Length: 189
Image 1: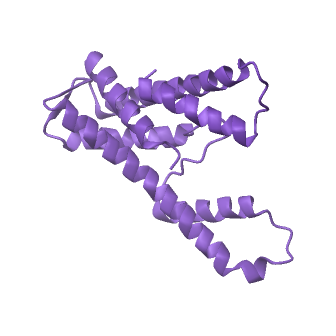
Image 2: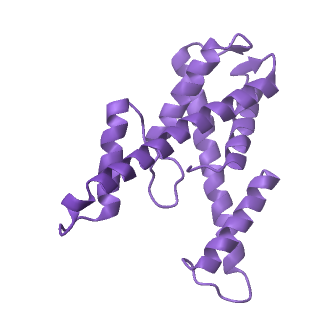
């Protein structure tokens, strides 16, 4: 999954807080609304995990045909995932390096969250249209993804500032990055 569970929880909490502070929505039961957001985002991202696994299985089934051909596994996997996602009408969350979610995926999640808000009797929205609600959710989600990029950069900076030089890309760098990044997520910074 592209987003670890603690990050999904943090994003959901902050997203709800921002939307309520800006008086875009109100919720009779904010904790339940936050839990709903966590479930929605987690379920959506699990679909991509399932598509990835199905694509891997397809490539395993066809590995005899692929032997001897000049085909990069990663590109082929990406192509099969894209075809499976398109058949299902699913927007992939595959992003460029350093990005957790691409803009298209953020738009898709914003649409799903808006739809969930519209069907939840505990939630009222105060913007003039459903599209404005989706845009407000998109803006808040995009802001949270920028915050996450800053969090990742802070973790990298912490490693770079260590007395002993640890080359980026090494296992040690990755382990430290994961540790420092997780600490920042847990702090909610």
